[in-house]
Image (cartoon, rainbow, N blue to C red; front, side):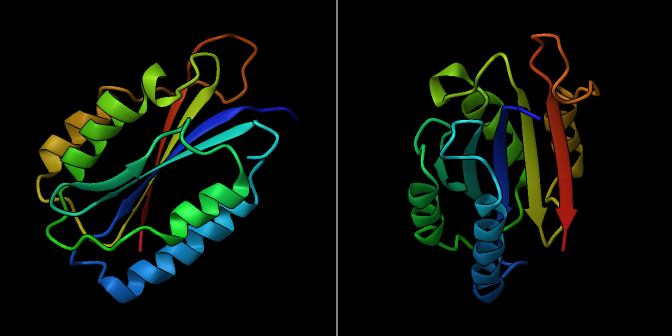
Length: 154
């Protein structure tokens, strides 16, 4: 099935993760990305790394080959600091999920959050996420921009 998707990976690189686990996280993300149709243009990937603030990112339109994305993942740096999930999701909403950053209006958005700690401010995080949460099925026949948020706690 042809199901174009824009995927944003929100990766916790705070003190609760630690530098050793951050290296494991980069390996996991690399394996995940290898299974996607990047080179065919079906899937676009954007990544943000956060701790106390958004430390690094690359947008959906920055890399278009699996090789370039894997190289970018390998070069990501551990951030440290607190687990400021609210600022990470605000960055996703206001910066990553925009046409300027490569968000395609006619495909579904999937945001995957991988973290080892609880947010510094759960109420701000909830507001950031709920303002863009939809429950439509992926790859519907409509041209609506569906958004999905997944949370993974390890």
